[in-house]
Length: 382
Image (cartoon, rainbow, N blue to C red; front, top):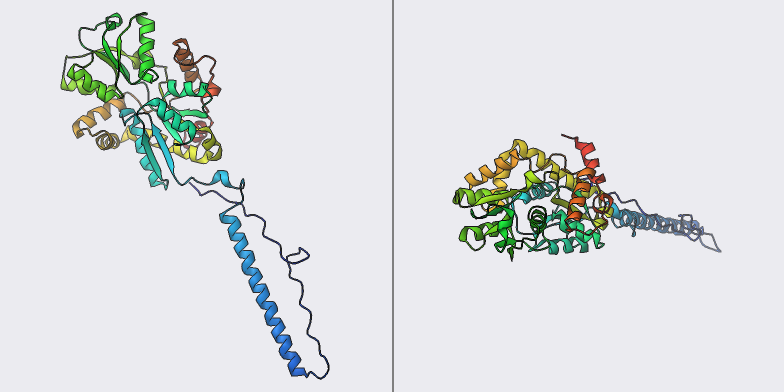
């Protein structure tokens, strides 16, 4: 990104009349018996002093101009200055849905940004940090971020992070929604996306069913709890479902696949602090361009995803390759940002009807697609 331009402040004017010129020195005069040589020497000395004055004046004006360019007064050019550091929040430890965003941070670093991913222990903490400005960008649940917006959090959705890749996975004896009654069912938290999806599934398919809720922070840990028999069911991301199916074939069943049952629902997003976006619109667009560049590159370079999965999730290469291919085939990371006004309106309506977000929110409240559309106008749509 081109560095922000800083309009020069007005150069200071010098001289008593404000004209920028020094008052003229009085001419040397001949008095009494002073000879011509003495007068000539005095005249030369005065001229030297005048030249020295103008040299010093020039240095002062140059210094003033440079100071104005480097450090403009408040409100002049500040909005275009690149921030020294960009902090990006994630609601939990890194998971498969975060991979494209993490690769994008590497790309931003290559382009000269100082970037720092920050991983929180829950969606609520991540959202609070974004609203306060402790991080500039955030990733995660639409439901959690939109609930915060309803409570006046100054944050806004700018694109989809990853398509819905959630399923509820259970032990074999749980074959229908009503079978969850009294079962040990783990979610991240009551305010999490997977908690909202579970609530919606029960309300639609088996109202009144009451599982025994257990809180386990992330999908990977819930998969491990299923493997050890500590819980009976849990919402899992596709990556963790694939892992337990490979490690223990036939031991678990997919009770519901939300990607199939709710294909229009936008479950995750990328967000920005509104004040930061107002001050740094070009940075927001460069951030989105980096993410979209990654979304497009990985379609033709699955090795890029494989390497990131090994690096950030600690998987073996063979497992990472299988998972990367699945995510490519499922188009988890959309080349055009994966979000528009209609899909946002549908998602708001869904979450509102499920009592998962407060009523009254609109697309204009929760999202600003101008940044995304400007980037797509620049790089083209696919």
